[in-house]
Structures are given as C-alpha cells and as structure tokens.
Length: 69
Length: 248
Image 1 (cartoon, rainbow over the protein chains, first blue to last red):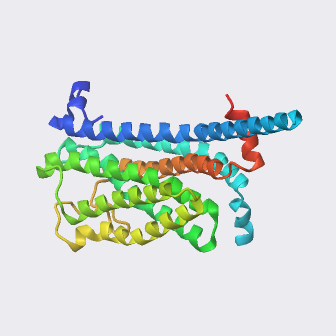
Image 2 (image 1 turned 90 degrees about the vertical axis):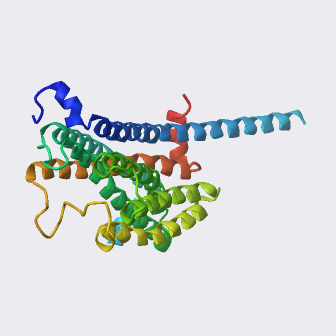
Image 3 (image 1 turned 120 degrees about the horizontal axis):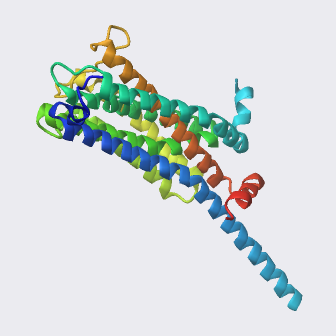
C-alpha cells in the first residue's frame, strides 16, 4: 500500500479532485454503457413480440369480417 | 478457411456463438479491470515528478489505446461486410461504434483532468488531442449514418465507407506526438525497446489495457446479439424467442 491512511488515499497527494473526477466520470459512463447495452436485447424482443401480436390481431379481424359477409 | 468460417455468417449460429463467448469476456474484463485499477490506485509507487496525479494513466492510456484498437476492429468488420457482403460483419461494426465513442470520450475526459494539474490547461488544440477528438466525431458519424437509413443494408454500406475512410486518422493519432511538437508526452510503452516506466507501474497499466480490451469485446458481443435479433425479426427462431421472452 502506497498510502499511510485512508484519508491519505482519498487525498491523492493533493490531486484528489482531478484523480477522482477522472475515475468517477470513467466508471459512471461505463456503467451507463453497460446498462444500456444489456437492456437493448429485451427492448428488441419486446418490439418483435408487439409486432407479432399486432399481426395476429389483424389476421383475426380479417377472418371475422370474412365470416360476416 | 472460408468453409469453416461460413456457418458463422448464419445469424442464428452467430447469435449462439456470441452468447457462448460472452461470459468468458465478461469475467476476464471484470477481473482484470478490478485488479488493474486497485493496483494502480493503491499499490503502484508515486511518480517522482507528477506525484499521485499520474494515477489517471491507469484509465487514460487503456481508454486511448483501445479507442484506436476498437476503431480498427470496426473498420475491418465494415470492410469484410462491404467486400464479401457478410451481414454479420456489418452488424458487428454497428455494435462497436457506440462503444468506441464512449471509450474515446473517456480518453479525452481523463486526458483533460490530467492536463489541468500538469500542463495548467484542460485542453489545447495540438495534434494529439485534436486527432483524438476527430476520432470521436468519426465514431459519432458512423453511428448517425447507420441510424439514418431505414434500409439497414444501405445504412451499413454508407457507415462502412465512412469507417474505412476514417482509418487514415489512426496513424495520425499514433504518430502525432512524434511528427509535431506537442504538450502531450510521447508513448511510455514501447514494444521493441524497454518501456520508459518502472515495472511496478507497467504491470497494472498492462492489466488495465487488456481489461479494457476484454470489456470492449464483451460489450460488442452484447450489442451484436441485440443487433442480430433486430435485423432478423422475420425469422422463425427470432419470433419464437420474442414470444418466449418479449411478451412479458
């Protein structure tokens, strides 16, 4: 361990603001990217499922109309 | 080779292969980045010139070098997609672009927070910084071109041509610190000669570089899988998957 104490570690030899700003922004933007990437697959599957349900409804409407005439 | 490679151009098999590779990339990425970052922040020695501000290097250099590596990956995929008309390669290129843009942003941002205490300024318009900013715009251009066309075959062609032309920027970034005088220091890691860095700093840096590479790989696989599903919505296997997982 390079630092004497925890407060020494957080102080980063006087460069705390710059070091923690760099690390903070890096890992929060990575977190957003990971979250958004993982969510994408479910979003796509949901859209396809909705499209399928809509097609199913249209098909049923059509057959209903045909049976009336 | 093509006979062996060809089955993986089939979307369903590409999707499954990506799913099989994903856990390995994710575990490696997480383990390496965690190790490299903790090592770099807590255990690597303090720099005699720059004090502890230099610890930004453990994310800045991995982000910067991988922003270029990811670009090459994207351009090569786009090239394969254009020349051999392999759609899976186009989808891979489209998956890398947003990841590369975020990594490039990180390289620029951590560079600024390192530049301020060391150079006294967040930003200068010198060759290294400007060419890296151009890289960010290239990524954004590829993303927007791919998003602008309803027909994704056409979209991949347009975005792919931009990606390939933009490769000219990569050697400019790489050699900018040698070709022009710059505030930016020359590279610390050299492949052919001894690196200008003590081993106790070099090891965590290399760990994080590989970690970032694995992370980009893992994220590419995740986005590639979603892209395969989005482009193959009419196929029975995707429809089955949508009914099982997307209906809830």
